[in-house]
Image (tube, rainbow, N blue to C red; front, top):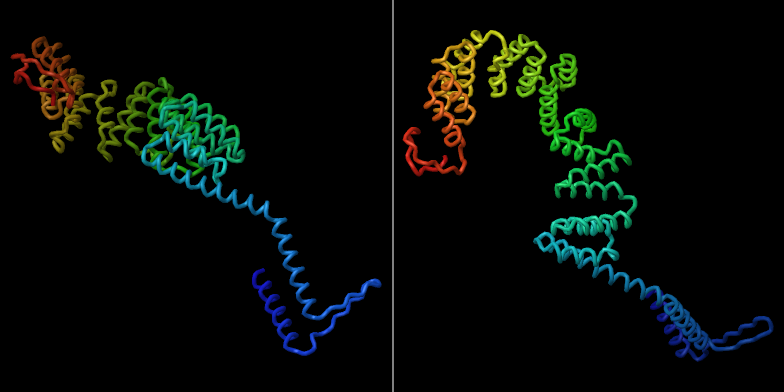
Length: 408
């Protein structure tokens, strides 16, 4: 535009200069419907320039209101952007109240009002105001109806962070009503099921979560082990249910020690202790795991004497394993080898003084008529066995400990 105007001015000035330098300035005659206009070339050039300038001026006047409005809008957007940036900075520094104020003041003029309101909702929750949080979320939904699922997901996550599990569950139901295969909603719902130990609901959700492939396999495996272990232990001795559950376990997890131990406990409850013992023995020959060892020491399993021999063979390789010593003690009790049981219990608590082991030793000593020893074991189980607990130990000569010591 400017270059065109400059070109016209240069041409006009050139024409004027040329005509003034010449003796003949030229002659222009315009005849239009009987009207005759006569003028020299310089006058015509001058009139054309005046006409162009006038038209340009009128165009600028015509466009001025819109251009002023656009300039004001750009200024508002720039200021809003500056407030929003400062708002995020304030939130990042922990100044949630000021950050929330800055974000919401600039929201309507922002290019991303949805993000402003979502960030403001998080800032409101950080201040403990869930009502204001929900108001900002509602405004985010009104501002961008297409982002309804995103707003609801943010709401559900904030509700979970605030410990509002029931409210989050209702929000997730709303999301899944809109999109039944929403992976993030299914993940959060599964988290609630784990926290509330709703294993039946989790059992139904896990296959779909695996199929969607949006979660890490490690988390899915962890949830699967937790879920199926609980379901197996609580199947009420129904053998058909045990078999159905075991078929539902992913193949790569069927060697998991926790699941095998839970299956063994379930088989014992279903009256199939022989199969339970076989399953545990086979697993222990392949993998050494505390859950398997504990399950192998169940008194309900058959052939306690044979199991004791196997455990004692394992003890030759692991003589200082406190859990294996405790299982050996239990099996010794089952075979009425009282002296051996006492020895194994005492060896176990000497290595790792756990309350449960002290309690079992106390019961054994009480049964053997050693009331003083039983009392000592029970009391040590309440003090010495609670590692890390801040328990004051009173002086007691029967315990054989220094007075004034504190729990280790």
